[in-house]
Length: 227
Image (tube, rainbow, N blue to C red; front, side, top):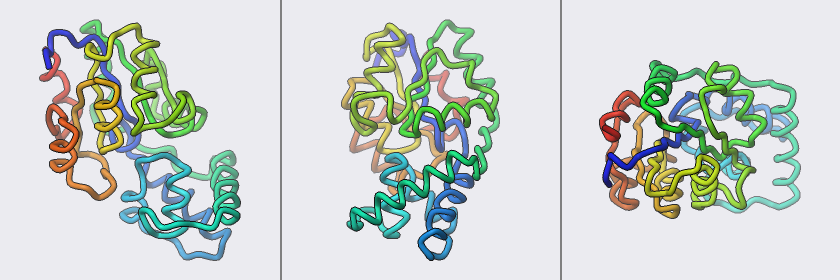
């Protein structure tokens, strides 16, 4: 990757910009309570995060990464989760230290900034507003914004299109294989940050599989790859 060509930085949300596992765990446990199921820990729910709310419902209800779930129960569980979401019965998350300053620094360099997440658009707006960073983004892509969510390349390509840059001029920053796979499918470079959960898969394994540029420990390291 020629770092001099980078004109845009695309950020994942959960586990990258904001620690949202507490709120997602609250929502999951409210949903499970509706079905008479005991609560799950943040550690367990953290492993289930990454492929969007609909997949989170199935994983949380089956306590498995890929076990099947009766369709009728699944539909009822989805309604339950989104009902609790609409009521705002969850913690909106805590922004990681230095996140706002990193984004502001990148913008001062003339870079365009987007957030690309699998979280539903309206829910994401609430989280970004709560964190005080919504207005820092030139483009905001939710899980329901593109034709298909990550790991499809569609959301990343949509972000590039809206930003007016070619895929080769952008870099994706995320915490899981969803981000690196989406970036790879879109022809966009990727940095993986170790602040998230990555569905329980070691980032080193994900980076090797998907050809990520590097693994970083904090967002403050992003600028090193842009020049």
